[in-house]
Length: 226
Length: 222
Image (cartoon, rainbow over all chains, first blue to last red; front, side, top):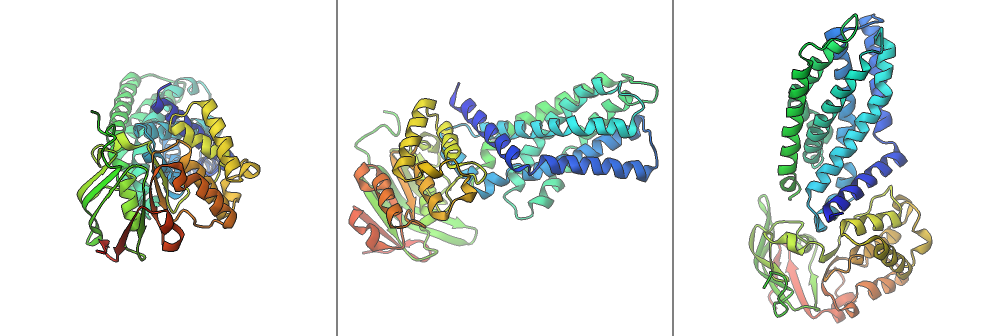
C-alpha cells in the first residue's frame, strides 16, 4: 500500500471510529430527517405522495440533513490540530480530501439506510421505487460528499462556519438537486416506477460527480495552505 | 546531489525572513544559520514572532519575504521534501480528544508510513519512556494537560525526525515530566533543535546559539 493510501485509510478509520464513539453527526442528521418527514406529513396533510412532490420532499430533507454532517466534517481537524498533523506528514494532502469525502459518503448512506424506509412508510403506496432509487441516491451522495468536503474544508476556518458552509454549498448543489429530483420523479410516480429521462439525469449526476471530484482533488492541496 | 542530501550544508539557513499578517508584521528581517545537531534557543516577549518563526520552519506557514532553507530544501517551494523529517511540538498537542493516546500515536505512525510492527514497538517504547503506559488506552479528552504534553512529545519523536521544533516544550509538565521529556527531546539525542522558550535559564545551557526577538519580530542585535 502506498503512503497516501495508508494515510487515506488511517484518516477514514479515525473519522469513523470517532463518530461511532461520539455520535456527533449521524443521530442528529437522522433525527432531523425523520422530524422533517413528520412535519411534511402533517403540513401537507397527505398520507401519500408521488412524482415531483415526493421527489422534492425526499431530496430537500436529505440535503438539509446532510448539511449537519458537512458542518462538522472538519471540526476535529480544526480544533484538535489535525490539519497541522496532516500538513506535517509526508503525504499527498488529497488523501485527506478523499478520506473526508468517503467518510461523508458513509454518513449519507447510513442516514439513507434509516430515513428512506421511513420516507417510504410515511409517503409511498409501494416500495417498488426503492430498488432503482438506490442508483440515484448513490450518485447524488457522491456529488454531495465531494462538494460538501470541499466547502467544509474552507468554511471550517471561519468563525461563521455554520452559516458560511450552507451559504456557499447550497448554490453549488442546485444542479445536483435538479438532477437527483429529476431522476427520482418518474421512479416515485403514482402507479409504479417509470423511467422517463432517467438515464439522462443519471448521466448528469455522473458528470457532476466527476467535475467536483476532480476539482476537489485539484484544489485541496491549495486550500490547506495558510 | 538531491536537495536535502548535502551534509556540508547547515541544517537551517534563514536570511531576511519576514512574515506579515495583513497590516501587522510578525517577523522582520530574521537571519540565522544552524549546523546539524546544534540547538537554537529563541527568546523574546509575547508577540515577538517566536511561534511564527517555528511554524515557518515547520512548513506550516509561508514566509512573506526572505529566504529559508532547511537541510538544503528551499521553503516553501520544497517543503514536501522536508515533511516527515520534522518533529513539531507546538501549543496544541495535535492529538484527537476522542481517541486514546495509543490510537493517536498509531494514527500518526500511519501518516508517517511506519510499518505496523515497527510502529507498535516504537509506541510501546515511547509510552514507557514518558510514563504513559498505564494511561495509554484512555481517551485524550480524559487526560490532564501534562499527560497530553507527554503524549505530544511521543508524537513529536515517533517518526524519528532529524529536526525538532519545540515551542515551550516544558509546558504543563511536572518535574518528573520535564526530566523524562529532556531524555527524549534533549540535546543528547543529537538532533538539530529549535527551542522557543520564555525561560532562558531552562535551556540556555543546552543552546549552541541564541536568537532574541523583540516585539514586532525584529532580531535583537547583540
